[in-house]
Length: 210
Image 1 (cartoon, rainbow, N blue to C red):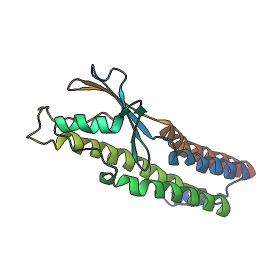
Image 2: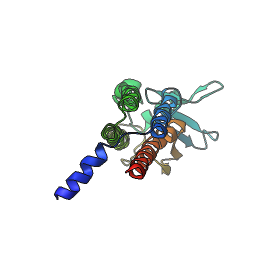
Image 3: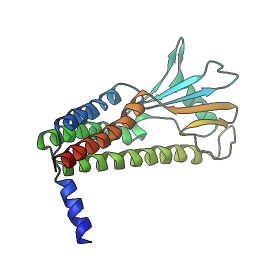
């Protein structure tokens, strides 16, 4: 047991080399697109809307795709009203209030790791961001579950409770719904992978020197 504790302690004390510091800066830069590109996209198709209704989900707002003479978010909320689903409103998504701050805080913590240059700080950053990613996915799923299960029983059209898809395709009433991660999500997913690479490179450098 003592041997494993000593190994863990020595790992956390490893200094971060210059290559890894540059990678950490790159990882921080991966979060910048999350402030101005969508994280998720949902598209709904039906006979009434053959070109589809598009919903963009940003880190801080919902935005419907705009086509001539049509606001897609307004149309989606009108359709939701008929099946008893409450409207999609920015104010109902508490995530929009804290997710941008988490991204900003993560960038600042990444800069702190670059300055301090210690493996333990890099591990802390990776762990925190990984937890944030898992929690955000759970929060998104939970929100979708609530919207699809808390339906108004007096709605004009009765549909069984449902959960809109997080990934892929689902048929809901007379709509074909497709939901996929968008641009910002891909950058966010790459960020922890870059941090892992930075850990590996610094550990490899340290082992070669010892």
